[in-house]
Image 1 (cartoon, rainbow, N blue to C red):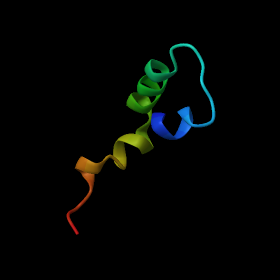
Image 2: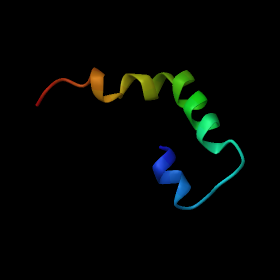
Image 3: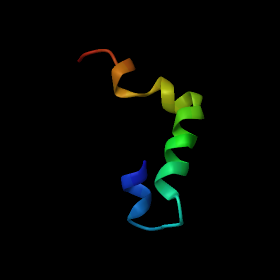
Image 4: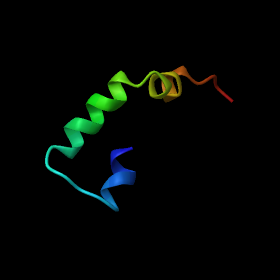
Length: 39
């Protein structure tokens, strides 16, 4: 998510805020790569 956003926007503490948001986001946690079934 950070890599996508930093192409267009930036703000102080951006990386930390995005990491905290993703850590609290239930959908983000459900789609993490380690929760995906192998193809």
